[in-house]
Length: 78
Image (cartoon, rainbow, N blue to C red; front, top):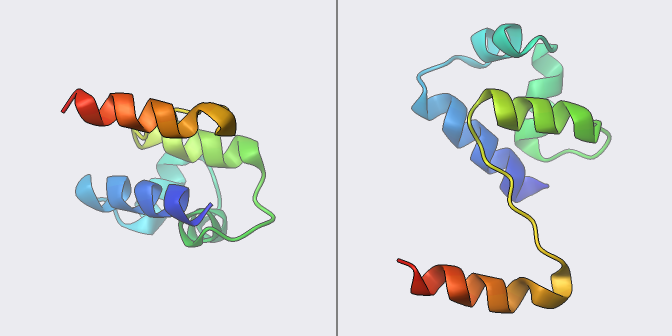
């Protein structure tokens, strides 16, 4: 959750948005976005997905058993 929160914060700051403005644009409370960016538990997955999508953060998931192989293949594409 912390890594996802960092990615969402990076997207927001890269877009030049203050947290208050981003929360307003996303239709969520400032505290909710603060909690998401901090990787705090207790925020609903729906809110996290909304923030990620609204700030242009793509979520890409693999089953844990295939993660290493997928990361290797992605690294080969660079």
